[in-house]
Image 1 (tube, rainbow, N blue to C red):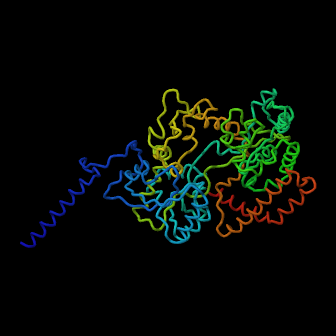
Image 2 (cartoon, rainbow, N blue to C red):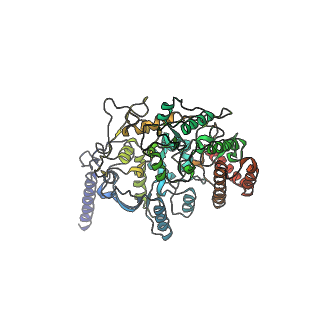
Image 3 (cartoon, rainbow, N blue to C red):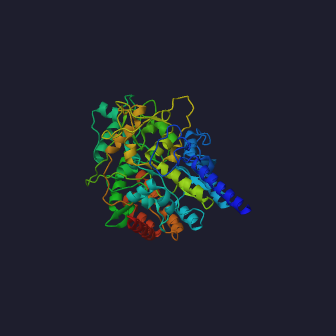
Length: 556
């Protein structure tokens, strides 16, 4: 009797557990009430399910928070918390890169670090050496298997995009932190130069197409009083400390990527600043500087001083080197100059990348198995079109809207995808998006579908202005390019390389400016300059760069 009662009791408990499991909200029998999707969400076909309160997990997360944001009350935070069953415990820092990186390093050094890092590339991303260091220490977890098992969208991108895979994968084959994939077309061709088109019209001049035509136009601007005030107060081509005219003009003589300044020919790397063509380009720059066609402050002024000069009410500026004419207050009188052809017929443009080695999504050894899975599913969601739209742009109807009749995409050949709704002046930012924190999947195809006004000189047409300017700079680079943005360096040589790179780059820049401004005579002191680079062990520097490039090719 007692035995029968025990068996009966156990059977009853089993039935109760089964019934409980059938009505736990997963909807397995069609009767459970699943958690409804957050407003604006749609089914995406990804592997994530709606998060249940009973399976929610708190994830301590380090991230940067802009001054207009409150991530705790943010709409997208609430959306993904509900979708994936996550409760974020945010440890926030600022968008100030210095302070953010310092705070991240202190947290890691103290041992009081979070389970998840969600960072911004231009604020506080992990460098290549940091990923290797913390990965070897076991602090950052290899993500390869998690991605394969729980992130099919991200895995598909890694499988199809060799450049992205090379950026993401460390020399030991592990992915310790996932970078953002951002193919900003105009950013990749940032070394542009802009000219005062009103002065061209007034003086009856054509847009320059060669280095000597450029010289002739700038001379006319300087001597023929295009601003009409009776004074010779016109200022030569200018720039600022992060936007130099040098790469724009140097590319008419030799390829200048404005970063590594490495060249590749037949798989072998070499250094542009010691080549005869570099000397020729430097001599040209020195000659137009001597004629007053380059603003003396172009290489030393900060962005604020540049803006004041560029927007002088008297209209005194010939033009400016800058990737973004925002520094020119969107002024209509500045048009981009097409890449110039040099005396030997060369015509290059700088190619860069907004996706670079440096991870922004990383999981640490403090994360539970459940937290790891939910976090990687969240990341995978950001590699979908829906996740990118809601994460980067925010709530539909607030941060963006669907295209309407008459809307035209940046690339006029494709169907528009979204119109970004501007925040009205004087109103609070709506706090519905994660902005750069969520900017994980923006291939060129995504950005090409951005709706923009056809009036390129209006605020609403600014992106189109940049897009159309950049078409002139597309596909004008050597067949072989040193992809500095995707380089990983052997941990055993990282410190040595960093010292060599700092010394060599500083030496080249210092001497380049001295040659251009005339404080050094290039005819008399070029050989001494080259010997100085040899003394800084340029040979060893090139050996390390060659090893890194060979390793990059092996990943392709």
